[in-house]
Every structure is written in structure tokens, then in C-alpha cells.
Image 1 (tube, helix red, strand yellow):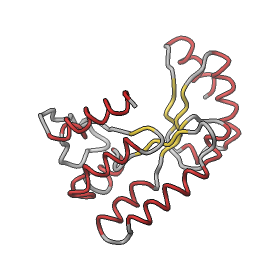
Image 2: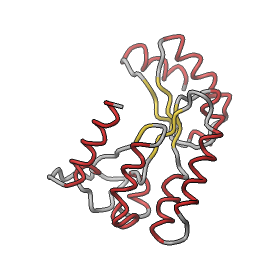
Image 3: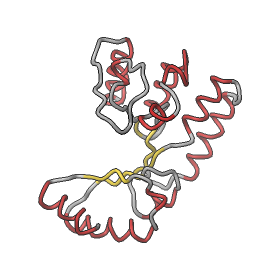
Length: 182
């Protein structure tokens, strides 16, 4: 596997890897992989996982998986804004120096398996999108969010995005500009 990753970095020009289910693979493998890849050239390593030790030893960034359930909890009344603040503060204490969280209110997995952003977050979609862009870390935007995706994605089949003008496009554009400038 590491040899294949090295080949893609060296011969194809890949500049990073998003590693699905990173927590299900032994950390020693990821440490070895990162060391080998960096001998070819520096690459970005993104773990689809949440454990801080992933970023401590092998990855540059990891998903903020517990952020969106806190947001959804505010919408459905099972959590308070204080719970969200407590999560953010606690997570900030465990993220290693230099580690980056990938923040999202929803993503393609949640859309396909649970519900659309509108179904999950209702009127809170815009406010929580703003939060994902302004928290420490980087925002995740998946295909179609900026086009007002209002259906669940078909995860295992071709499911083209219907690109159309939507109010969310302006919000994403403005938030991206805010991040670039600040």
C-alpha cells in the first residue's frame, strides 16, 4: 500500500491523501506511510477520523466528527448552545499543536445515510455553515452544498449535481472570501 502511495506522489503528482476510516488502520502503518511519503515530497494527510493521536503522529488534519451532532442537537432540542461551546473548547484542548480539524455541519456521508442539510438543520443551516468557516480549522464543502442540494445523494451510483443558482452559493462565496482575507 505504501509503495502504491509513493508511486502516486512521485509519478502522478498527488499532493495529499484523504484516508477513509483512518482509525481502523493501526497508527504505526500511518506513521510509516507518512515518513515514506515525505521522503518523496511533503504531502497533506487528512484522516477521516477524530482521534487526536492521528494528528499527533501521522496526519495534518482530521475530521471534526462530533461537531455536526452538536449542531443537530441544538436544532432538535437535545443539546444547548452551551453544549456546542463546551465541545468546541474541549476539542481545542486535545487537537495537537499544528493539527487541523475539518469542520462541517453535514457532509456527503451524513447526506446519503441520514438526511439532507435542510432536513438535519432546517433554518440553522446558514448559521452553522458560518460557524464551520469561522472555527479554528478548515471548512468542508461537499459537492452540491453551494448549489442548494436538496436531495439525499445516491452513495453507490452516479448522482450528478444539479447546478443552479441558490442563496447558499452567495453565502459560501462570501465565507470563502472572509477566510482568504482573514
